[in-house]
Image (cartoon, rainbow, N blue to C red; front, side, top):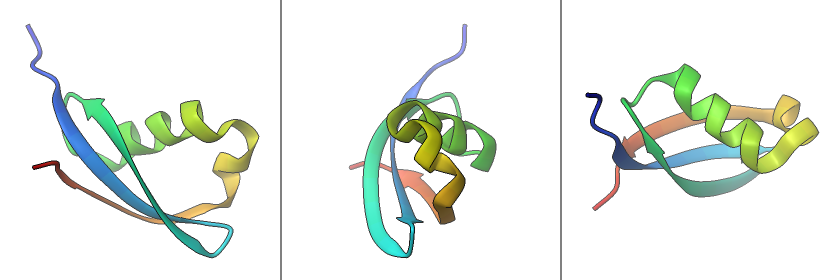
Length: 56
C-alpha cells in the first residue's frame, strides 16, 4: 500500500508566484505537475519553476 503525504507545491503561474497543497505518493515533479493540472486545467501550460516540499 502506497502512503500518501501532504506536500506544498511552490510554482509560478504566468509569471506570478503561487503555492498549493496536494496529497502525493512522493515529491516527484511529475506528480506535482499532475496535481496542478487538476487544479488549474488548461492554464497548467503556463506553470514553471515547480518546487515540492513536505508540508508541516
